[in-house]
Image 1 (cartoon, each protein chain N blue to C red):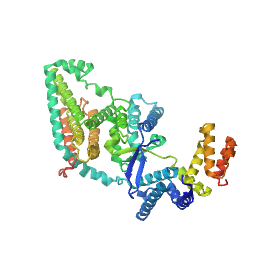
Image 2: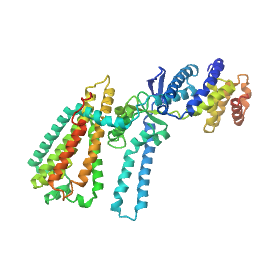
Image 3: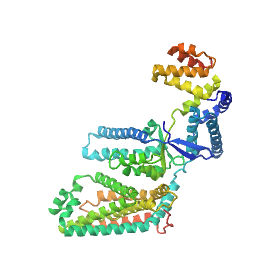
Image 4: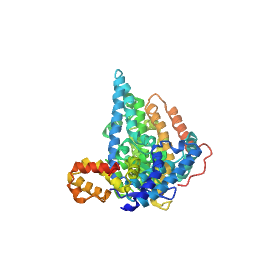
Length: 325
Length: 237
């Protein structure tokens, strides 16, 4: 501790104390300030940086220096921030950002879709050949119901209120889709696994209901919500695969940076998926289990919603150029 | 003492050093937040049940269950967006969320960070997230890696130090670091052992008043030493 420098340090502290007190009392955020005030704020930030440099030299390891580090960090945080999310930014998200991400994901979505179709066919073939395998994907209760000539979905409408069921379904679907995305961190294998598992289950249940003459009923149940729901799961899995690819073949100097960049770029696609699944949840809660809705309106709802999904994800009829992931 | 720091090039060229929060502070913050969201959800359920108990349970079930679930699941993203990277638990644990550039995380970064809770919390008790925290240099979980965020420690004493220290140092004319030590010793006096605080007080008084006879200081009792430290800070030594 260099005692002889004390008068110098004290004189400096005295000269700067008012400025620091002003920082401590300043509760106004720079984004709320008019331009001239904001420029003054930045000037004060520069002065604070100079104070910190002086404190590090003059009073190293002291509590005053540590406190100035905190003040500087807080000032830095209030200056270094993204622009405010306005309604225009949300419009931009749906007009340009989501379609651009979907454009970049399009080939992966097709591959994931193909994986889903192949695993559905595999599940169908497996249960057709080895009917006992259905126990791997269906509960005992479900099997009993189908064997007695009824779909497991038949009584849902009478037992659970549609509002409760749709929220339960949409939250479950959102979790599955988000998990398909997040598990892409396992170099894309998690996303493959979830797609393949869903495909196998769907194929197996189709084959099982076909064996008992209920496949038409099952198709009637899924036709209203299924096209969008399955498409969204494929999109989420494709996003997960892109996440895995960002780790396998980084597009930035480091894998970490590449992962972060890709995850941020894919965020809008996930938001679109979640919104679409909310719609699916309501269809699955109110329309699909309702025995009074005939096949044709269900098909119209299902394919109409699917076309609306395509238009939403493409940003209208004229898609903007694909983003670089 | 946490030596792990995030070094960031400040906008002025002066480097910014932010102490990184470890798994301990992170877990502490999470547990507090978890209790808060459980309490909020239960409070909602109880309030709706009390208000609408005359109705059939089947009718009020959606009003009870789903908002409570929404409070539980959306607590973190909503609170972190509203409190700018903080939450009541984080505030209590003295940590906050910043970007890797030291800035405020954007809404999309906070949402992505929270989406990855699904993976970080698997298979149970945030095992993946905590393991990731232990093995990464910046003590981050997968959600932070995806969102580009880091949890840093906040210096809760900063405002207090800057408000009183410069004044005290100027007033006493002593080296500011010595004044800080005296102030800290007086603040921590009740929590220190009798011998330890007396030894520290003698050491600091000897530095503050070089002309003071060390033998005379040795003869002072604890309360007298404390009083003399206060006198030094009052500038009347």
